[in-house]
Amino acid sequence: MAYMESLRLFCRVVELGSITSGGRDVRLTPAVASKRIKELEEHLGVRLFNRTTRSLTPTEAGKRFYQEALRILEVVEEAESVVAQFSGRPRGTLKITAPLAAGRLIIAPLVPDFVELHPEIDVQMRMSDRRVDILADGLDLAFFVGTPSDSSLKMRKIAGVERVLCASPSYLERYGTPRVPQDLMGKHNCLLLRYPRSPEYFWTLNTESGFRKFEVSGKYDADDSEVLLNWALDHRGIVNKPRFEVAEHLRTGALVEILPEARPMAAIFGCLYPHKKLQDPKVRLLVDFITERGQAYLDAHV
Image (tube, rainbow, N blue to C red):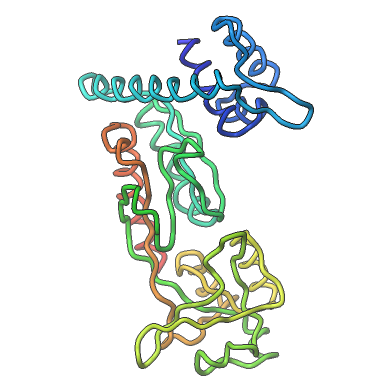
């Protein structure tokens, strides 16, 4: 299986543009990854990469080999999935990603239990509030809280998620409590989750005429949802959050809900995966496991 591991490494190096990054992705040190690539080039008798001090790009031979290597890996993966259905013991590695808060509160605590039930499955988990490219990043599953837009992927809805606007009592005492959504416009520091191509430059709130977009703004934003929450707790502004993320703070009074009659549009907690992954028993097992346990967590934090 060493040759297959080298193929996986080679493909990730091409996709990430770095031997160090590609090696890290398949859990190899830079030295071992570099040695594997060199051995692969010696085995094939061709140079697969053009190397400079600043970049690593595939040669023409490397580009052709990359396409064929992807096809081989896909065929082997599908064959292993078929056999796993007969053995009843799925094995292999699952690469998943999740937003920071949902990952920390819901997904991560469940991963050890899942692996304990299925000891021949490894789980590699990454967390980020930024949008990910499932195919380019070589992921099996991407959990999300929001509204997915990529129709080329299969979606599994786990639960509907209520969103709330909230702020600390000290902030509201100092700046006033908004009475209508229009009060948010220019009068309050709205804490936004922002990064390149981020969709959050407005909040969709309920009004008498239905849901409407409000282009709110603030003096600072971040690409980390937990930073926004900490700012809100530190009396710095108003935050738009899934209720499960702030349920405890609402219970203790550290935060209070505002504009409950204009509550933001609800989100979906779910996961995305490539269509072919539906055939993989270990993907299906994890999705079913998180769906059952994740729903229980959400039911307890409303």
